[in-house]
Image (cartoon, rainbow, N blue to C red; front, side, top):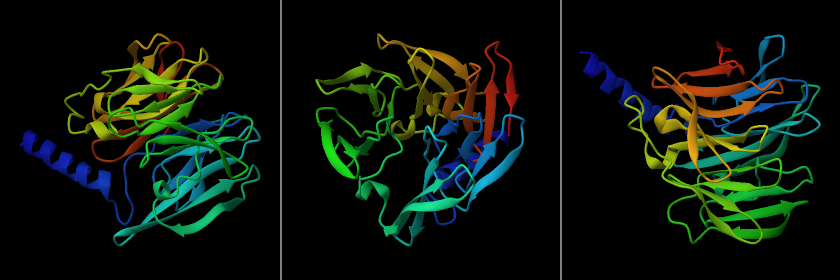
Length: 288
């Protein structure tokens, strides 16, 4: 009976992973923290904020958001992607520090990948790093003009997510490996990263690696969704598990707070979400 229940739960999640209501529903991958210590994350229906004193509230309602980005002046950016029959539409929004929410890009037909002109990976000089998955390249925009591009065509498979370190290094995840990109070269940085736990063995290579973020030493952390753990990829490309999810939960994204704790975004085999804080001493606390 337990075996049948587990099969049923897996079938349910596989369905939810692709379509929930009228939106595509793979897990969100972003946790971002503003200069005041407010934590923002998406449950795919709304964006939540947890303040330093623990107060939790919805700050952007009715948005299907996978990625978030917060600027140095605490403007929060996100997307809203909707299914319309066999097609999609999407927009990009910003939440200002006073709580006002405005559209940056209004509703337009198609999935964001079809345009490849906007990104939630940016640097302090205003450049936007766009992952053009269809054409396997990184395009860099400034003031809405493309200024440079990096080809990724020599790498097998599909590019999935990308992240920019505070020092300016760009990393792109593929199906099981990570590429480091610079103006001079692009090379595999870490390989053979996919592992699967019994609870998340159903996750395919396409979604095995999810959100990426950096610690104080600028070392890359990546959510291994298929393996219920966070991998820290050292500067030499070696990887080690540094945080683990338990039970029916697995990590999809994270961020480091100023006090050195890590905030993990986790999804479950029943398509639920929780936010967990792990302090520097290893103490784990469920925030939501």
